[in-house]
Structure formats: structure tokens, C-alpha cells
Length: 408
Image (tube, rainbow, N blue to C red; front, side, top):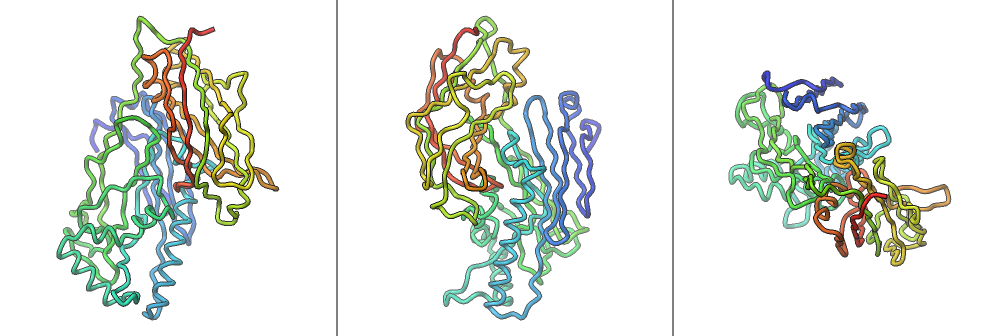
């Protein structure tokens, strides 16, 4: 790595080894807040670590999802059932590994990276007769697509792409398009030499999610495999990502004192409960949460809405949720504000207590940057999503109004 970088975290678990380095000039403003390991002999393992770099919170989750090879008689029905069972297990394990120490990692940081041997495979669709392909047919299809470098067709047959599109797993993340040869199953040699005993697949991935709003988005500048690597059946991935600037620029001659944020016309749509809850049993309400010391709920406001009953499209047209943000000292609160994420939890009120249907995240620093030069600012019909375990679980709509005032 070189002397320009400082090692911040090192962790070994099973056959996974994770290092996290930061540039040496950023090391003094970087702290590792937590590292957790989850492991299961049948499901795989994960190592999750969270860093704060100059006020930006980054989570890195290295996963290895087990894939049980289907050593079964090559009957079409048996192959199809075996693939579905394996895929369902991987989807469930990915959701489980995102929940670290009781906290959903997709919601707690500004930017989240999931990477490693996710083990999703390329599974071509059934043939024109509607019959599942035999093993030999899949081998022929694979060789044909690779010869033509038909990346779009390979992507369309990718289990992970389909799982994200169908909202079965990891739909909260962005998956850069793969314009290169699949990374598995290779012969242990430099270059691209496949072992066709398994369907060539993009088993190794880097996924990214950002809770930071704004016009600039996280972008993959480099996303490619390392073909020179020769000691594994996999070709490891490397990525270089652009992260937007999170600095807040205040006029030193007109430093803001306080702001009032008001949420109105709240409504949800297409709420998706856990699989064991019927849609007719959804009794939703919204719970607002913010841990920052300088963000306080207004005395005239509650931190939750009323409960609506038996609907997955709740509305709260008359309720107002109001926060007061103290910016009386940018030196005292600047970094804290820059760190702050506001969480809106959609809760389901049940007989046995309340459960979380999903959580929406609002980047408070982005709200401040949009409104700071105006005495009053508002947006109508803002649309965002509820997430749980890396999946979308519904939509949230709201109006937001910001009013700046002198601190009391």
C-alpha cells in the first residue's frame, strides 16, 4: 500500500481477511467506531467496520455468502428447485449480515460499501420451449455469451441483478454494470481461463449505498477485476469511487443561529411488511428519531404520528412534526450537524408490540445547504423510500419547510 496510507483496522475471520487503510494525511481525523463479525458454517460470514473520516461516516461490510453446489441428478425440475432454494438462502443471509449488533448498517452511515464473494451466479432463462436448461445447455450458452462479450445478456441472467430488480435482496444498493468477464469459476492461473464445471458468474462484487442527498452522487470511477491474480478460483475486484463533498459553507459575516424544520402532509405507499404479516394487519405510524444534541423536537410537536389502521397506504394530512436545530456556534456544532442523519421509522402497531416496517433517512446537512441562503425554504411532495435489511419496504412522501431565525 505504501507509506502514504495508515492501517486503521485489521480483522481475520475464517478465510476472510479485511484491512482498512486511509490516507496518512486523514488519519488524525479518522476514527474506527465499531467492528463486528458474524459467522455461520452453513450461511457464510461477514466483517463489518464503521469509520468516521472528517465528519463523514463510512461503513464497510465484507461478506462471503455460502453457495451449496447442487450435486443432484441433472433433472430439470430438481435443478430448478435446488437453485431457488440456494438463492432464497443467499438473499436471507445478505439481509441478516446487514443487521449488525441490532443495527441496520444501510441506515446508520452516510455511505455503505458491501463487497466480497457474494456468490450470486449467472442463471440463463429457460429455453424457447419453457423447459429449464440442462447443465450441458448452460455450458453452451455461457461459452457463446463470453465469445460475443455479450455483457448485457449476462447481466440479464445475473441472480444478483434480478434479486435487486425484484426487491428480493440488496435493492437499497447500487451495483455498477459489469463490462468485463465474470470473475468465477477460474483456473488457478493468470489471465482468463475458466473451469466450466460451474457457470461463469460475477460472484465477486462491490456494491454501494449513499444516504447523502444532493445533486452529486457516489460514482464508480474504476470497477474491474484483477486478471493477473492467479492463486484462487476467483478474480478479486477493485474499485475507486467518487464521494461528494460534505462541507457546509456559512457566511462568516452572517452566521446562522437557528432553524426550524417542519414536516407536513406525510403519507406512505406500498408498505411491505415481513413475510409473516398480512397486508390487512398493517397498522402504521411514523416515529421520528435524531440523536444529535443540537437537534431538538419542538415543544409543540410530538415525535410520532397517530396510528392508522389496516392500510398499506397511510396518510397524515393534518399532523406536523417540527424540529429546532441550534447553530449558534458552527465551531461547537459544525461537525455534529455534518454527521447527523434524521431517521423516520415506519412502525407497525401489533398485538405483541410495535415492529419496524422500514426506515427512511434524511441527510440534515443537505437540508441546511439547500436552505441556508434563504429566510424561508420549502419542498413539496418529496419522495423517498423506507428500507429494511437492504430492501425497499415502501415509499414516504412529505412536505418540508425550513425557517431560519435568531437563536433564543
